Image 1 (cartoon, rainbow, N blue to C red):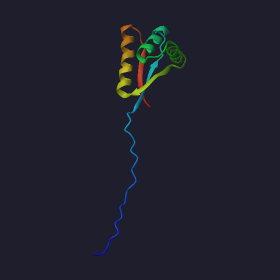
Image 2: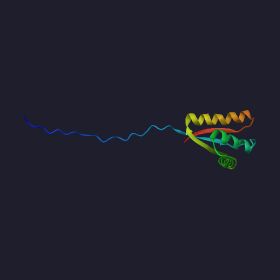
Image 3: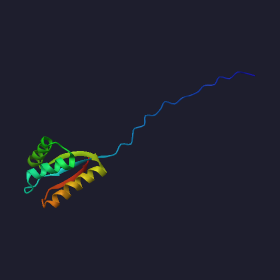
Amino acid sequence: MAQEDHKIIVEPKKKVKPNLPKMFKVLVLNDDFTPMEFVVDVIMKVFTKTEDEATRIMLKIHTEGMAICGIYPYEIAETKMNQVLKLAKEAQHPLQSIIEKI
């Protein structure tokens, strides 16, 4: 019986990229009526920022018209936006928040 050469061919492993969720920015928009202190409080409550961080974000909202308060997967971003809107409505302020895909 003849001896046969057997070769094993191993294909290189393909790199699998993890299926990461799409991310969204939560923005708070400026208006001329909502008190700055209220905006700071909302940012601290909803986005768990320190008072200094929340104040910096509020000033950016005030001077630039809007600011990013956080970046999250869609469901979390939507929840954060709705929390901002609910707190503003309860306090009878016109503060607005939106989400944008990154």
